[in-house]
Image (spheres, rainbow, N blue to C red):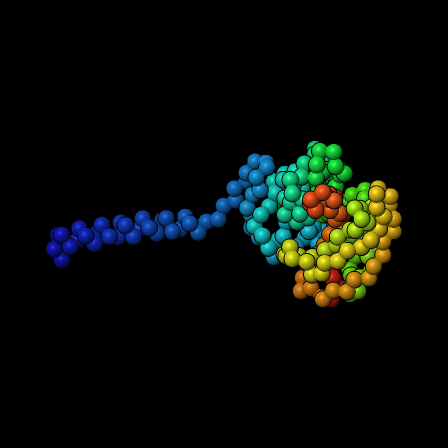
Length: 229
């Protein structure tokens, strides 16, 4: 082997060794925690936490503070346009509530949040509002088709819009309405709703009222449910 060939081989081995180091470094996964309000990306869970509906476990999105979790839930899950987020109200050391309003003087939708996983990120358990009081089904109930929807509400023209969702999807399994009270007067609603059995183990019932002005979401009550397979 000539000196020139030997020198070329040595240079090639150095380059290959250098690439090996780079490739080795790329296989090491790291988690970067960002400050509020930006979400952070962590390892994806296999299954959705039993009590939490947002974020989806199948998504890499996680929330390092409760306000961001509540805002994302209001916009991405419920459908608020530009909600106003109030101050976090601490419950126990790992949970609390975040008030959401569609407008500065609008009614409050209270988003329930909790750190349910070991990475201490924030998850949404549900939401409640004064204008939509759901008595059936109960939160975390196992439901089957047809499901009985009951409660009391007040809304524009008495109409409350209802979506049944399954984990991992924003597309409703079924969409319907219930009729309660109107003009600020609470009235009862009751309806049986049939739905195809979802593939997921659990999901959420989303009850929301819409603005008479532009059809945007005014307030919502959202509950976690399981599906009786």
